[in-house]
Image (cartoon, rainbow, N blue to C red; front, top):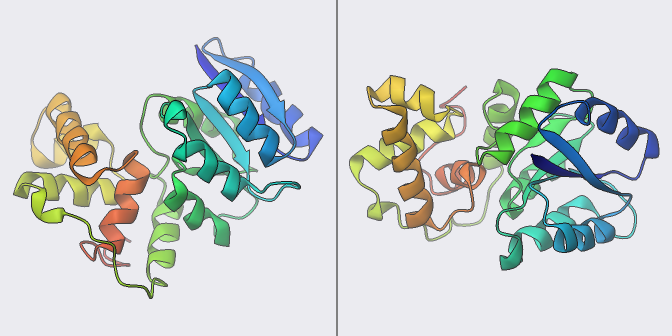
Length: 221
């Protein structure tokens, strides 16, 4: 059972998401919150699998709430998905850098919402859609500070190939097909890359690939 916390300051939005998700046999809505501070509290108390987090809220916004949740070592297994009104929201890139596992636009179709929750719950990131790759590329192109010290030299040639494909939004199965590997081998490569780079999940691998200069904005469009 995938345990979900809904966080949005609009009651009707939460009700809409609840009506879509609670009909699924493998998804349970365990709590709701109307602000980020309450979301952080609930995450610590309930340790859900997924938090659907609005960006703009009173008391504490979704960006800071996300940062607090993912920085708490007790909540290592809690995944945050950002909810936004616009697919090029200025806050989304910051949220992914803060540790969010991806984002969903609020007017997404019900099947996409359900699929997104399941994808994140199993440890993947919501980075496959083309619009998400455009988002990451656009914000990466605005980076003016020097890139962080990322030990890309610790990666093997094969791992660098895999990282490039992760940054392109490919799933393990797609990576396996591209590189003529088994899906299990592709998954092992991704796990090793995460460990070597100290990244929380695939979403942060995408950011690292862009910020390190390994991938240039526009290459993957």
